[in-house]
Image (cartoon, rainbow, N blue to C red; front, top):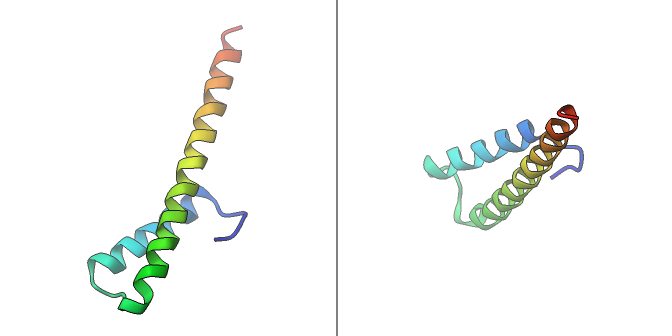
Length: 65
């Protein structure tokens, strides 16, 4: 996973992995690495969403002053 990845890019990659899993397009050899990649992408997306949520809260609090 690249450091400058956007939320949208991460979500798209995650969707591709889920699609591959649902369509049985992964070999047994690929499965473990793709699951690890998916977990990393999920964690990245969670972190990004928490960060944006915090930033929006700050903006809203400051706009009321």
